[in-house]
Image 1: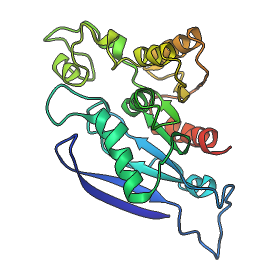
Image 2: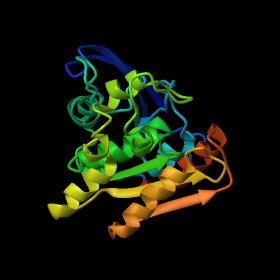
Image 3: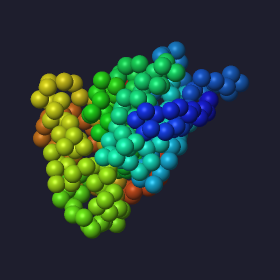
Length: 261
């Protein structure tokens, strides 16, 4: 497995940024791994971290070699992977357009939506679902694990309000006007309705959340919304909390669903 760290200048974030890449391009000939799709053009997974996290791998490393896919790991800081209101906080444009284009030009990867997936946990789960729905011409599938689908929970917060995670000022910076956020494109439900109204194909959607996770109810609500709209998707619940044990288990399951066919 080749491990790379790349730095380039981001015009969306207005600074040099780094991202990590895993490439299964050096199989061990002495102990060859099982390779179900050897010879298939390499696919790409953009892997997103959560709130307070950083770029890193939480996919079992045998999977990229098994299914022949690269892993691209950017840093979204605490920006929720969406375009904030201040200069240099265009995280959706960075992830959904600029970084995809850079990976295409530099590595000749992620050339089509069918070859490009995105997965994240917590804040990154929200980011994965949002960016795929906002840019279905770049992402063919998205997997959200314990997704922080918090739009309805933060709507109508006022200056001085806060919750156990952050305060009003933080959410306004990330999501914009909290009085109208539920009607904005930062609400994944709005993006779904836009695609349905335009009769455009939606990316394949996968979701999972633990039954002891504090984000279980918003995940159930988005699952119910997708069912009401007749949007094909796969949703999983099983015992587990908001932790790496659950995310590692479902990272393997989601990679099998996205790359194993």
